[in-house]
Image (cartoon, rainbow, N blue to C red):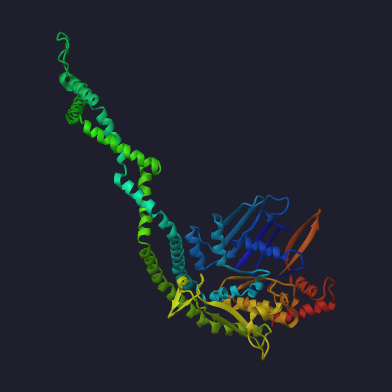
Length: 581
C-alpha cells in the first residue's frame, strides 16, 4: 500500500506531505484546486514521462517521493534483486526533475533507469487517469483488457516471438524479390570482377609477407656481408691485427672466456668475485648463442634474382586490385566475398527464393500453432468476462445490462503475405494474435447488443470501466488502485452505487479516488481536502487530512455548495452513516 507521498515544487504545489491509510482514500476539492496534480505527481514516481514544465516557477527542481509497503511482495523482491537493489519492507521511490528537463530516478536511494522505475510501478499501482475511460470508445483497446483479465502475457509472448521472426523473413524475401532485376543487370559485371580477383587470388596478410621477403632479397648482399663481419668479430677474431698487441686477433667470445677464467682464479682468493665470474660466464654463453644464430642466418641467405622478380610482379598485381577495389587488400577480399554472394543469388535466384519460402513455412507453422492456442484461450475466458462485467454493472445500477466480448478472425485472400494458416485458410495476423476483439452492450431489455463505442453514454462508460477495473483488479491483485474522477457523467442513486463499489473494492486493495460527488465521498475511510491558496502573489495547492467533524462539513459542501446549510450537514451525516451500514 501507499503509505506516504511527499511532493516538492511540482506545478502549483510548493510542498505537500500526505499520509494515506488502507481502505478507501478520497480526495475532494473545488474545481481547479489541484486534485489531479497530486495524481500526476504520483504518476511521476511510477515511471511516467515528464518535462521541465512540471517544475514550480522559481524552483530549481521538482522532487516527488513515495513510500510503499511491500512486505511479502515476491514480484517486487524479484525485480529489485534483478536490479541489485536491497529489498526492505518499505519501498522508497523518488524522482527528481530539474528545470532543464533532466530526470533522476531512485529506488531505496539507489539510482535506477526510468524503465526500472516504471516496471516497479506497473507491478504496484493501477492508475486510472482522468480520461482513461474514454479508451473504451476505441475498440482496438478492448483486446488488451481481455488479455489482462485472462493473464495471457505468457501465451502472447509465445506467439510474438515467431511472429517477429516471420516479420524479418517477409522483409528479407520482399527485399530479395525487389533486388532480382538489379542483380540480373549486374550479373555480367560481377562475373568479370570475380574472374579478375580470382585470377590473382589474393590472400589475407599476403602483401605484408611479400614486402618483407622483398626487402630481404633486395638487401641480401648487405645482410651477407654484415653477418659475416659480425660472426668474425664475435667468434673468430681478426687475424690481421698486430700480433704485438696483448689481445690481438681475439674475438669477443675469446675475451669473455679469458676474463671468466681470470675471475675464477680471483674467486679462489676472494669469494666476492663469484657474482662477477657468473655474470661473465653468462655473457660468454649469450655471445655464443648469438653467433650460432648469425652463422645459421648467414648460411641461409639467398641470392635469387628470379624470386625477386616474381615478388615484384605479384605485388604489382595486388596493387592494381587495391586501386580498383577499395585501397587495401582486406577491402579487395571483402569485396570478393560480397559480390560472390550477390552473384550466387543472381545465379540461383529461384532456389534462394524457395529457401526463404521453406523458412517461412516452418516459422508459419510455429506461429500458427501459438496463435491458435492464444485464440482458444481468449474464447474460453469470454464467458467469465461477460458474466463478471454484468454482475458488476448490476451493482452499479445497470440491472438489465447484457455485455458480450465478440472475437472475429479475418480470412486473407493473399496467402503469400499471410503469417497464419489454420486448416486450409489463411488469416490476418497482428503482433498480438489473429483475434479482433470488440465489446458489445445492451443496457435495456429488448434491445439488441450493439458495439459499445456506439451505444454507451458518458456515465455508462465510467461504470463499465469501473466494472472492468474491479474484475481485473481482483484477478491481478495489484496492491493500489487509483481513480481520477471515475464519477464522470453520473449522479444520485448511481453515484451511491459507484461509491459502494469502490468501498467493496477497498476491502481487497488500497484505493485512492478523486471525486466531486458527496455520495462517493461519504464512503471514505480517509478523507483529504485539496485547497488552493494565494499568498504573496503566489498560488499554492495544499492538502490536509480531515477529522470526522471536518469530513461531515466537506461532504455537506459537496451537497449544498459553498454555503453549508443545516440541511446539508444533516444530509452529510446521513450519507456517511449509511456508508458504514
